[in-house]
View 1 (cartoon, rainbow, N blue to C red):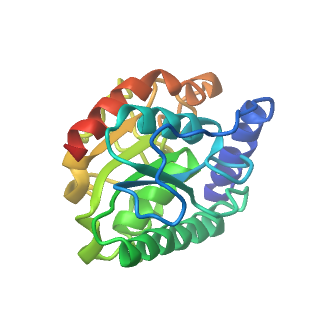
View 2: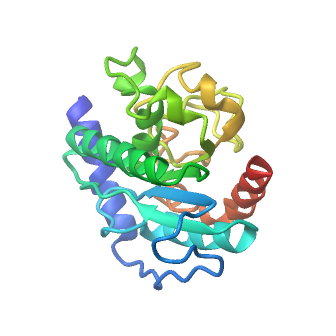
Amino acid sequence: MRMRTLLTIGAMTVVGISGLVVAPLTFAAQAPAGACPDVEIIGARGTTERPGLGVLIGPLAQQLTRGLSQTVRATAVDYPASFNYQASVREGVTALAADLKRTAAACARTRFVLAGYSQGANVVGDALVGRSAGGRAAAAQPAVPAALSGRVAAVLLFGDPTFTAGESFNVTDGARSGILARGDGRLDAFAARTQSFCNRNDRFCQGGTSLAAHLDYSKFFGDAVAFTRRRLG
């Protein structure tokens, strides 16, 4: 049953995104090549999206860059985002942590915004607190070291299959937990820095019936940008 659920995440998502086209990203406040940015956005795309930031996180990164006064660099997590869900998430967690550690080592003052959509949101959460394990206690340790987690200024999650109802950082009307719910309190250490957006009846973050709801998150970009601006000061 669990494998069927994981395959469904991929199969349903590819139907929804296959016809979408994303314009090339241009960043008004992009950090010069080779320079340390004030802020690095590390983004993880959803299942079966083409390599890059993806159809949701890409435009979000554009709006974040325009809405922030700091210099910004956007980095896409290099991972499969595939139907082989568990292995794909593990690769994403490793890649995200490597991106963050690499920049942190080279740029002592850079702060981070982590953003993920669908499977990518699962990747972000697991990188911060360990594997979700479908709501049970995680077996793995967080991939992002505690010494660096304080430099994560904001965490933005959209359509997260590990969504857990009732958490303080949930900002939309989803009253049920996701199909791979992480469990109460797992992200407490990041609660003040996190916003999780989950539409009512979303197929994955609510266990609902609507794929359209899973594709309807750009309407929250304004909220996400305002929250991130406050977090960065």
